[in-house]
Length: 102
Image (cartoon, rainbow, N blue to C red):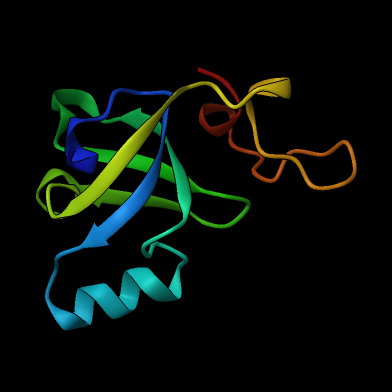
């Protein structure tokens, strides 16, 4: 399944990133690479782009075209306790409201 097909709130494991080498390097430097878990935080009006949260890392905005080149395996909705990744302490990894709730 393509990242561009996921609904808001859905978690997934990145399987592959099929983009040109420059974009692949840029996304990799921000933590978007095979094996990481991400969550779709929101989709923009018209769904032309989506915001994803990479496990306790970056919040990224991707175009629908870029997201259509990223293969993922869906894990379902929500993130369990508090609906956000947490470090060992009781603090959200991301302050953005859209990254903390469904």
